[in-house]
Image 1 (tube, rainbow, N blue to C red):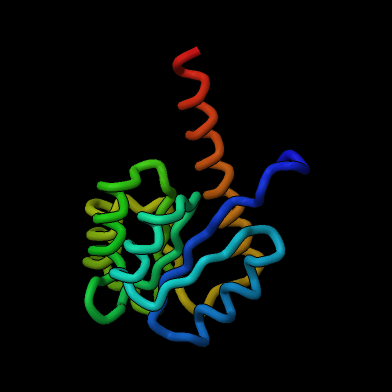
Image 2: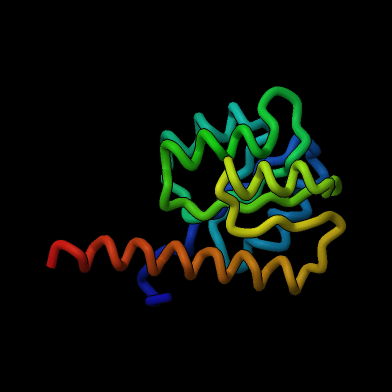
Length: 138
C-alpha cells in the first residue's frame, strides 16, 4: 500500500455485538472497518460507501449471509465476499459458493493470524481487480 493511500475498507456483518467488536479489534490495525448488525443494514451501508471486502456471518435474522452476499454480488461484483460462521453444513457451504459467490468460507471460532491473512489476501485481490479496471481503458 502506498503511504498516501487509505487502507482498504472491510465491512463486517454479524448480529452479535461481541463478534463485531472482536473482529473490529482484530482488523482495525490494517483496515478501515465498518460494521453492520444485519444484512439489510449492510446493504444500505455499502450503497453509500464502497468497500473492498465483506466478511459476513451466515446465520442472521432477516437476510441470511448467503442471501445478503448474493445481493451484494449483484450490485457490487468486484467486492470480495467472505462468510464467517459457526455453522458449516454442506448445503450452506455450497449455497454460499454458488449463489453468494464467496471468496472464502471461514468458521468460528477463528484463528486470528489465519483470519487476518485471509482478509489481507482478499483485500489484495480486490486491489488487483481495481487496478486491472483502470488499466483496461489504457
